[in-house]
Every structure is written in C-alpha cells, then in structure tokens.
Image (cartoon, rainbow over all chains, first blue to last red; front, side, top):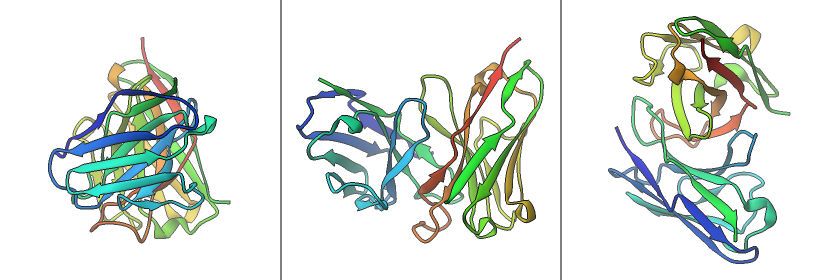
Length: 109
Length: 124
C-alpha cells in the first residue's frame, strides 16, 4: 500500500502571506496526485488534480507542483476563506486503493 | 446542478447493520464509477469502497472487506453501502464521491463530486 505523508501537521500563516504544504508518497505515484480542501462541517472539495491542474472554479492563487514522490501545494496570498484542512490523495494504483495523507491544518497566525 | 445526497446514517449497536444510500442527480450516473469514503470524528479521510459504472468491478479497503457490500441501481441513480458486523471503529461520517471521469490513471481517479455525508455511530 502506498503511504502518503503530509507536512507539517499544522501550519500557522498570516492572511496575505504564502503557504506551502508538502505531501510525500512512499513510492512513485507519477503525477497522479490530487489535493482537497475541507472546511469544518463540510465535505472535501477537489482543488488540484494531475499534481498541478486546478479544478473548475479554483482560484489561481492555488497551485500544485511535483511528481514521483514529492508534491507541494502553494497558496500564494492567503485569504480568510483558505483556512481549512488540506489533504493529498494518490490515485496511481490498480486495483484502486485510494490513499490520503493525514492532512495539514492551515490556521490563522 | 450535480449533486450527491447521502442518507441512512444513525446510531447502531456493535455487531449491528446499517444501509447507507446516496442519491445522485444532475449527471449521467450510469457512466461513472462511484466510491464511499469515510472520516472518523476529528480524523482524516479513509477510502472504503469503489464500484464501476456497470457494477462489474468492486473493491474494498481491507478494514471493511467481508463486512461491507457496495452496490448501485443505475435505474434509480443510487449508490448503496450495506454495513454488517459494525464495530466502534466504523464510527464516521460516510461520504459518497464520484470518480473524476477523464482524468484517471488506469482505473484510479481523483474524486470531483462529494456528498455532504451521513454520520454513522456505532455504540452500545
């Protein structure tokens, strides 16, 4: 099973600043990686797929990068609505056993 | 509007059973593989099960294999999860989620549409 590890567990950033979240896979997942945002009491929302492609309606301040085992989600200028928990997910294996990272909580500094 | 709405959650005793439903609307349900993903209170996301568009392919996480059964009824635009022999560790919000068709790797995909979730609590 591919294990996804996110760091840090909690990230404290001030509004307007940049946030950088990391996700590492225990083996290569190529570019088959997605990022999700989850706010309290809500379902996850797809932000990024294919490691770097923004989903429909996602603002340009969200960007993803990486391939293989190392991935990054960057939020260029944090808005109040961006404070949430972020999860990475790999979808590289067959049969499908989707694995998620444990999440990074992005909180207001 | 593309929408998934789960129902059927509730309080059940250990060893009991529960059947979750997910009603889909706003898209051609029969064209999509579907999934159940759960989230224990205060914890992260855990994939539970997947079913292909025609029910030909079904997969389960090891943690639920032999106890849970995923199914679908394309005529009713509905997805189901039959949960038997429930344990305290199955307590979670259960989400149904759609495969993001066209952006998959082999048969594995990101998940582009999620329901609001239904809470299952297993406790005596």
